Amino acid sequence: MSTSIPVPEEPRERPRVLLLDDEENILRSLQRLLRKRYDVTATTSPEEALEHLEQATFAVIVSDQRMPTMEGTTFLARAREKAPETVRILLTGYADMQSVIRAINEGAVFRFLTKPWNDEEVLATIHQAVEQNHLVSENRRLLALTEEQNRKLEAFNKTLREKVLERTRQVTELNQALSRSFRGTIEVLAHLADMHSPALGKHAKRVTALAVMIGEKLGFTGDQLFQLEVAAKLHDIGKITMDPNLLKKPYAQLKAHDRAVLLTHAPRGASLIEMIPGLEEAARYVRHHHEHFDGSGFPKRFQGNQIPLGARIIAVADAFDNALNEQGTFHRSTPEKALLYLRDNTPTLFDPSLVDILATSLQHDDHPVNHAIEVEVGLFDLRPGMVLARDLRSIRGLLLLEKNQLLDEHLIARLHTYHETEPIVDNILVYRNPAMAQADGQGPIRLPSMPTPGLPASSGAPLPVTE
View 1 (cartoon, rainbow, N blue to C red):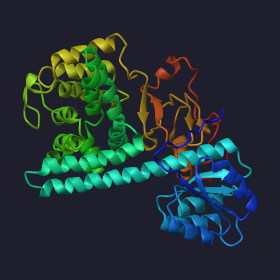
View 2 (spheres, rainbow, N blue to C red):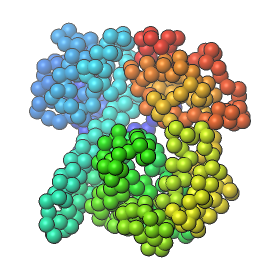
View 3 (tube, one colour):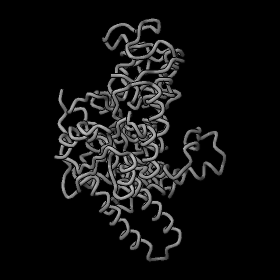
């Protein structure tokens, strides 16, 4: 199936691509393929290519591996020193393992392309590399500006709010160049949370789906529903300012100081969101989503209807997902048990009417997240005895393990070894309860002794990177 590659939209200038190959015919072929979409510079000399990097900014470098004066791995390592944000692609007709290892260690290579190439694959890879370069550059700029604003928050006088809002408008304008929409700013912040902690990002997505469902049941529409969706998506954004190790510890094991720091995440998150004009109501929801219905919560000890309705909705969705999807206990939890936890703490912690709405939705099977069968886990959270709920593929689509594969220590070790040379970036879905695998109707559980499609036979053996 061919992939349609969109032409970059104006007013964003044409991305610059640098091509390096000792064969003129290769360069001419690549130039003809890329020149309609990109500003292409080509050379046969590695030293001349390095000079180009000093004189101009390039989104992507495509370098041949085997050249008479300098290998591609060596060139890409030097190119990374001069232009660390430029995305590097290795073009080679030699798929030897040593080249692969050197390219990863020395050149931080984004993709490999082989000779002869497929035009559609080249276009798709270059397009992905350009988007990666653009996203990294804009995210770094946005994060730097946000950090600058946080430093100023401590030093500004009573005119702080006006100054921050003005600076925030500048941040928003920069971000619009990335996203062409107001939602782009929100997605960047959500992406920052996901980079800080993947579990935090996945939790936010599930809480958002539940909160929007409850809001729709209450008749939320338009901006009211949008504010709720944004607040749910970013309700834990304040945690990106905290040590990730702090977030991994159970609350009961935290020292008094660490608990005090953790309790500031809601006001911190609200302060970040307030910097984006038009999201004041979403910020209010985030600030108060840990208030308790009886007034025992934080930060203001609001109670009942003093708590904004959006904050009460997020509190219910957040608590339900935590009860259901805690990584250490998900295999023992069910929607019924999670709902029972909410019932047991209502009306002490939660609004009874909102718990009823959630319970009704779950009972009628119209909830937007499938909690009953599958759960997402990270590669390093896999444990023996888990059963894959979906096929597991590499970043290039190579089938590694089939659905219904029962995992043991040997298979998990082989996955870890494969990850070292070709990262496994997709979410891994396992059955919440291994007994559900056959109940899902997709065939028997595959035992570890059965052949596996894409993994090498030994966890200690080198892993080939082939199509």
